[in-house]
Image (cartoon, rainbow, N blue to C red; front, side, top):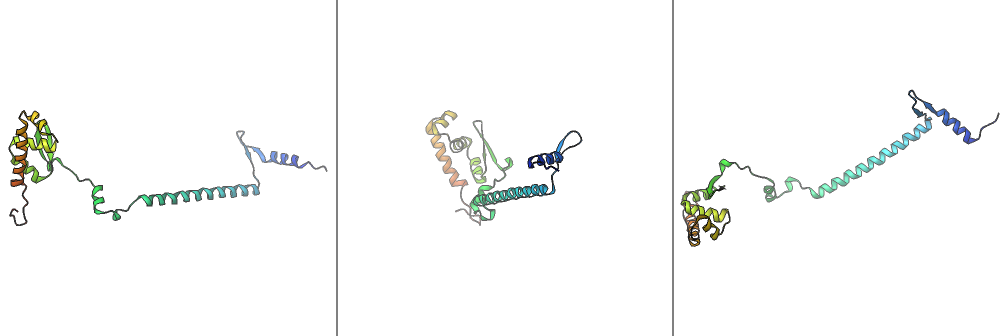
Length: 174
């Protein structure tokens, strides 16, 4: 009996292991030891991937812990910067000056402005809300610049004296 060289034997064995499936597809039949080797290789790959994912996850957690702060650790000032109060148009006082709509939040300021004559109110709102200078206001209202200055200073004085006085808890003014 003649034996084939080793190379020939492996080719014969490979031909035996290669089989045709239905539809002409080729597949390789693996021996038990080869299946075990493939299983071990796959297991090793899975472990490497999971270790890498765990390392990435831990790195991400440490990065987040450096940058994130718990709400309980924030100061009162920082918490106030995070919130935005609701504003409703019905809670604001609306004025119109030379076609500009102006909304005022503060009740006392709105009352003080309402108590002023229209000419003085316009000057105050144009100067302090719309940031116009006396020359621009004078052009807008068709009056002399000195008149604008007088109305502005006298209006502020009236507002301070009459409407912006601080009331104490028993109703008397200071």
